[in-house]
Length: 233
Image 1 (cartoon, rainbow, N blue to C red):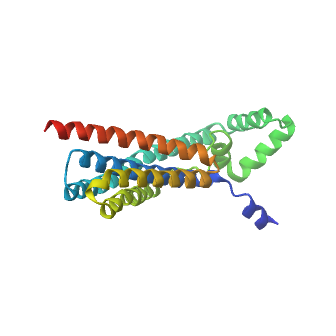
Image 2: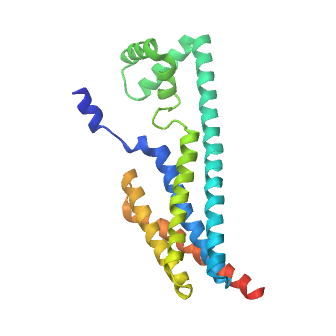
Image 3: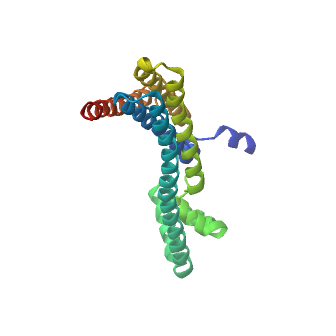
């Protein structure tokens, strides 16, 4: 019965860390690389220049995503570590006060005061620090910061997303390149939005339209700027 409960009670919150990094990486890879390709192509550049720019964008973007994710998630991990140290110090110095805090939390959630105290005492006897981190501060293993995982996922998914517009360049003729890259990239974004929504248990249509809107805006603005720059030089 215990194994059955564990297998049927899987929640999407356990995917939050890697799913956010994966969606952000792939989305940024598609949008930024497609936009870069369209901007360079609109400046009347040749196919070789477009490919070089797109490849450079892939490498630079993947490294930037990895570094940015690592730094930001490391900051979260540092905050979590500081909270753990502070909570442990409070448990060591004022255990009765910490017990009273836990009792108050359970009472606020609707537990009878006497029962809340009994539960708090038992929970603290088993794992005082873990109980306070979870019930007082909202920390959990599922949402814990994992900097290396986030960095690797972001770099890998950015690269995977960025490769798709580059493949469209290779599959297109110069005159059709803007349309091929634009339409295909919007299709990739729609698929990404739908898959991310499905994996996260969110409404598919709203997520799909959201990524397509911002992708269209980014590509249109970059292409416009590229055309203006190309016309002036």
